[in-house]
Image (cartoon, rainbow, N blue to C red; front, side, top):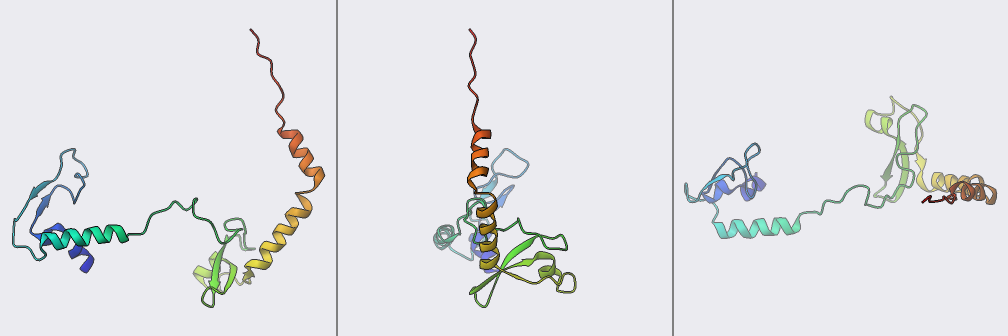
Length: 156
């Protein structure tokens, strides 16, 4: 309720019809109709503006999820035996980290009784397997050969 009072200009005595603060109406190209002092204000305009400025400066910055570094390296790549994705979860005040079946987490252990996988152990195992099977000199040489671009001739 407090947030509504502090973000709605109606409480400053201003009538806004056809839009909101600093926005046009949804289906109209005309700006909203504003009538100052349409009724007695509950909050004075100076206080309202100061609070709006503080709320804007304190608002969290929205960052696209692809830009934020991920704490769980295998997030979205591990799947449970039941077919659902395994997501990262922490326990004991973020001291322990696990990959858990998302179905079991959301619907309860009755829906999937898979064990939680310790994050450090499973990530270390996957990295070791990648080093042994993918990052071999023969495999890397094959990738380099495949990626070489053949020269082309420009005919005049």
